[in-house]
Amino acid sequence: MSIYEEVEIEDLDYDPVAQVYTYPCPCGDKFSITLDALWDGEDIATCPSCTLRIEIIYDEEDLPPLREDDDDEDESGGEEEQEEGEKKKQDEKGEEKKEDIIGHDIASVLQKSLTVK
Image (cartoon, rainbow, N blue to C red):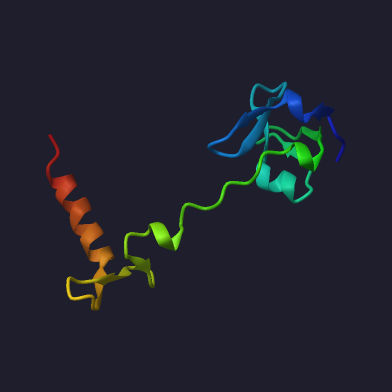
């Protein structure tokens, strides 16, 4: 496929929360490429609404650092995910116990749906 335009990275808009670069597309939507993709050496941003693509001109040393995942075990408050629907938690005696979080979530949703104004 051909490239619609070559664009310097300084001309793109950067969202630090989503870690995504965007650039206006002539169709009215926006080209987008993730910071992770750029760090992986990809340089083509696509538009989700049309077939146009742009090539991003950049140097890796000019890219912001990748944010680490917020799923750090140190910040989990003593809880670890085990399997889907279970949590391992320490009780007041320091013993581990498992909780059924799926049943709790379903009950919460049902309760909220019954309390409709």
